[in-house]
Length: 303
Image 1 (cartoon, rainbow, N blue to C red):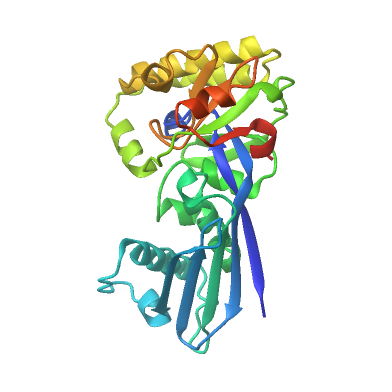
Image 2: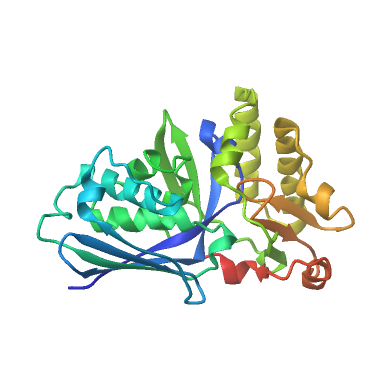
């Protein structure tokens, strides 16, 4: 019997890093995501194959279910296999009905975005596995990759949302964010992927104050209700400048695009993945001339 699961990718428009400390974050599910297909397979074995968006295999391995169930295995495997074993072990701990002695599986994951884009290869995997095991994806993320969980909310939701950790408990709600100026918004890939866990570790060294959370919450709420491109750009600039001071890191516009007349907003971990740019005219040629070939209009990225 074939089972199939799908999860949306994600973009974090506001409150990067500060969402970990309870700030309200505006998050956008993407049209891109990841599929997980489950087939019965050889008894006692999980044959796992992961495909990139172009159909190439970026990971393939056979893992004994006994190895997955061992709480203290000597894996001596590559990093991807070790993490996969850990995820499946934790999923089994929450639902022991999937991995039974007489079961085996052929698993295939299929990304609809290039793996290096940083749109949620890990979070969509976690959410798909949680669906397969019928367990809580937020809990599975917390004990494996960690993070705020906003990406899991995006994986499960087809509309823009505001996400917040309240006493460490994830809460999110759908919001009406469909800007009339969306035709002037573009997502630009910075040609490198940033390791979110490393970025979070660096952020944790900062001394975040309640006033910082309040300021970012104010900006988030105003972004949701922005009525003009100019107002939106001003808010994006405010957000960038404020985070730049907190992180003691120059804004991406200062570093890479100082001659660009529109706004440039980092998304998620600073220094990689995508940025959101806005301009009254199509800025594609500007970015391509600087070597940034992936420029995606808002309406082709966001669900």
